[in-house]
Length: 219
Ligand code: DX5
Ligand code: ZN
Image (cartoon, rainbow, N blue to C red):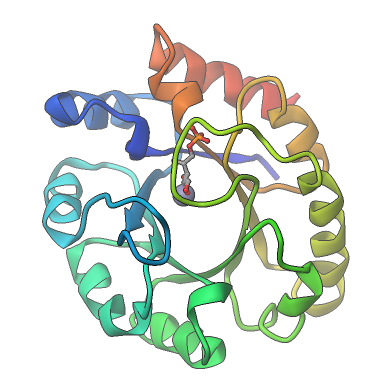
């Protein structure tokens, strides 16, 4: 199966948002990754419904919305209404994760669970049958441009073992520090979706960087 690439708009130039979205529309990228932060669950604040709605008006590819917020249950429907096609919540923010995932699925969109780098993959065992995807953080959430955490490869392997047993349809997404140098290894280790922020928007030619990451992932 080919690997999907989701450029993270967190690293885009927001003064040129329309141009940045158009670039992704015309590129080989598959999804828009949209990072929502609340300054509470993570030590950074980004954007909410208003900007996502604007992006949705011009985006020609699905929006993969990654909620890094406390108490996400309160806002699931609002993010769906704003335009989320994929919606993920952190394991760390959901005391009733099974119910949160069901709620997202009832909205008719893809439901994902995100796990932080310190939390054992085995915690996901009983939610994997219900989730459409698991987003494995390969940095600590909150900021773009951080260095990739190497234990991600071992964690990917563990997640793949659980996936094979519990839900072979599950998609595995990796987020943080992804670029053309590690995309191939991640794809080989079982990643189905790669998020890349600074490696795309920090490049001289973002469109070319998207091609490079895709090519590396599919090699
Ligand atoms: C971090 C976010 C990431 C971030 C990735 O909290 O979840 O999506 O944008 O950025 P890079 O690719 O620069 O690590
Ligand atoms: Zn993200």
